[in-house]
Amino acid sequence: MVRELEAEAGNPPAVSVIVPTHDRASSLGLLLDGLSRLNGREAIPFEVIVANNAGNDATAELVAKTAREYSASGGVAVRVVREPLPGKCRAQNAAIREARGPILAFLDDDVQVDPQWLRAVHDFFKKGAFEVMQGPILMPPEMQNDQEFLRAYHRYRTIPFVQYNPGRREITTLTGANMAMRRELFSRVGLFDERLGPGRSGISEDVEFAQRIIRSGGRIGYEPRAAVYHEVDWSRLTEEFFRLRHEQQGRSRLLYKKNSILTIVPNLLRSVWSLGWYSLMGKEREKYRAKGRYFHYMAMLSEKFKTFNPFNAL
Image (tube, rainbow, N blue to C red):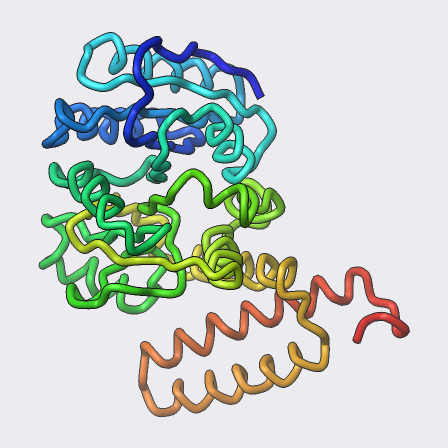
């Protein structure tokens, strides 16, 4: 890990916003632009730490240049932490060690913040009921009535939109594109699992982290006002990406759940039966849910057989 920009002197921020990024300087620029125009930024001091996990030096420099430009503009204080080894969790963990705020918020580089986001995060933790916050991850307004997009999303569900009932206060899982937590939580539950997530197993680092929070007695709250809008990447709405995503999920969950063959095989057979039944019934959404579970458990089984030993496989 290499620190690229030194911390600015002065009082510590109320919120440290950590943005892990990998080869998406253009999307990162849009996010930084939104962060520089947040409502309440004069009253709520915050810093932005870009966790630069670029795949090569040229892209890493482009990310750093983007961050420098926004920091120099005076709209938002940006620091960059370079993590050259691949892995979103590695990059986030490096940024956590550099963060100065008592509240750490995490945003993916392909989201846009609602102008009220910072104020909503700050107010959420002032109430003191929860250690962790999940904010909504919404469809961009221009896509909400796009029928081609809605049909593809309904089929694949491979963009992480999250929106609970506004009256719901407590949840039991996390989606990492828009979450925040008290800094001291990490001393109790540990940092993010660096075997998981993009750049490593591919997915599930946020789900695994949420499970550790719940097991430790922590509580996760939902704040509907702390919204972001997720970029629509059409390459995620394909059969190939659908298969890859569910295979990643299977391999990721095997790492931390340590499923045995005795649980994998029955679930795999159940998914095959469900896939056939819903295909015959013409129920597309149910068919794709079963199809996803099939890819999930097939990936688990494949990983099991890579290291198969009849004496310890069970």
